[in-house]
Image (cartoon, rainbow, N blue to C red; front, side):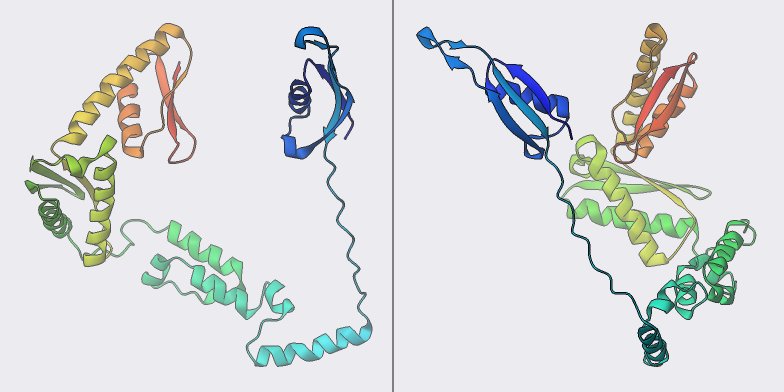
Length: 303
């Protein structure tokens, strides 16, 4: 890296200017003081500080000597391979082979569980990755009629969620009861009562965690099932949805007036859906999502 030269009233200011030009931190650079400011009368200084700086060179890694294999080494490695396979040990050839038994076992374990339940044979996975891709393709092409129906009804899942929430409210020392509404596979559990703020938490974060907990508890108790469960406490989600819809309308008006896009704060997937649905009803704007959870956010831009 070439040296850069900077001047300033003090050495520290000159160093900072050099780091800005190099774009590195102080621990990644080395400095050479060319000239220092000289003391003058009444505590003043004369002249300027001048330094040279560059990025600290990275030390070159020493080359490792590689011993060339002779014909004798190759023959010995071939003799060891059968013994290693007989004892169950992996050899380098087994690890890199695309047709070996190890690749086949790995592909068999990687096959989707749904393919096994549907009776799809995994014998083709013995051929390596090609067998796994075939299983995945078969699984992706299965339609809803071919999938085995869940033995658990939505009502059973909802009853388990209501029982869990009633016990949780009691454990929190609050007074309240849970009510269930079933619409096909859509389950809506409303908890109404007094002193339920602890179950909601700041920004609804506790409520979101409780909802995930109820889903896991129902799945472990009843097994796999095709339902969508929604938990609400003291009408919090209804009030938040109304507030988010009003906020989305205000943002849409600001974007239309300014003609420039606006990026909102990161939100959960449920809140982003409310924002998108509200913006779909607004003219002159459109919305997209950007980033990765938990920092994914909505971008509102004019059309």
